Image 1: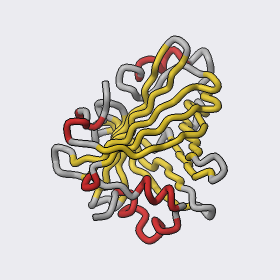
Image 2 (image 1 turned 180 degrees about the horizontal axis):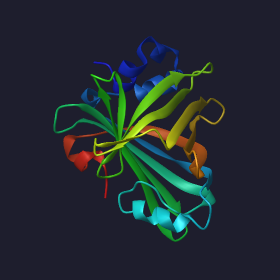
Image 3 (image 1 turned 135 degrees about the vertical axis):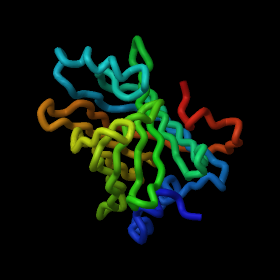
Length: 214
């Protein structure tokens, strides 16, 4: 059984760094979850006067207004079959600011008809985006959103989000860079940092609804 990332990348998957192959090659049959812990060097983006408007996405763990440097971070990935039997992997991200904990969550699955990974954003998954995946020359993984829609109805070409991840041999950790950009408003959210990862046993009872924690 191939993971959703293996299916999306095809033969490119084998050009990933071995640690990235291990992480992105997991399937629900292996009964493992991924726990990542680290720090984001910097979280920035969006003009200060506009940041209060981002609070509307806080409840759905879609976006947040807080910004800072050296921010503690955790990531949980659960690989499971959703209610329609589709192989799915959740991304449960938590950012620990001095006076708040913010989430940025998603659930990814491979769409057979579109031949790409679809990312259901937030706890509700009402906002969806299609992803292009590429393997870089150094064996890193680059993901970029193509088309965004709201509950499958409204199609939007922007904003765009790019994610780049590679493995740092000296640090023994993954380095991540995430950038969400709007053509008019500019950078909405950017964060980058280092994440140390471990693989832990998982049973069905460990998986929250949609793989996403409250």
